[in-house]
Length: 340
Image (cartoon, rainbow, N blue to C red):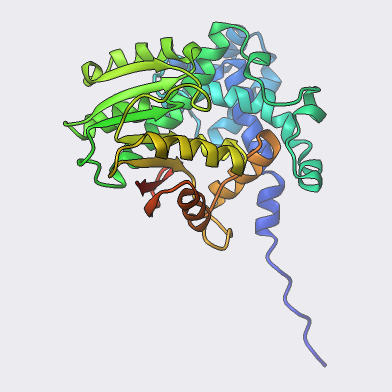
């Protein structure tokens, strides 16, 4: 008589079965203003209910779930933000991720609902989901407030990752860094703070520059940073011996990435370089999870993808670069440096 084969551990399946519920719990709490209400101090359930104009039964379920997710604490019948919630989930925090959370809740959530079709057809889901040909920001960011909040969400990611990116390599040989698609200028600020000899240029579309000027002005290196408006695909690039591309290449097709990198290569002096900040896939694409999930996100939302080191090496060498190096970091972004 043979014994029955052991039953596989269901933990991974059960965890993933409810993983989206955890995300949506945080999204809903941000959207309803839970963390902002508690930013002023602890509240009872009834105080929160009145302030947020939400029924006590549903609200209690939500805030108790946030306690379970370590986003809230409950003491003596009052709810309070954890340090992580105060830092990343309140609208008054300079490190807030709320703009990107709102974009994830309102926009990407619906795109991901059509992931199966994205996989079958190999294209983003903007037309299927919204009836548009592409992810045109003007459809969602028609007001300055909406645009600002999204950029501040990206800024929240940037202040987490940019110090790691600029520390991944010794950049002390360079004198002028131009960050293309720099958003709020977080990478330029981090680089100038680390390297005393460095001067920086924030290059982005003109509409993005007012917020960048505001944020950079509050930094201790503001006097070493300038601003240039333009489209990096068509407008002249500011002179520099180091260019940066942070979360840019993963948005675009191989052909567009190659065209941009060739523009950069042509502009660089001998000995210059390009610094790329993206999450890098393992050589066999079996991890890390953040990069894999972002790779699927690029499939549903953009023309692009995440890449392995080998794919970056091939792309950069086709653009004319040599001596391509990569570094994995403990942040949402890794780093690649390629020399001319």
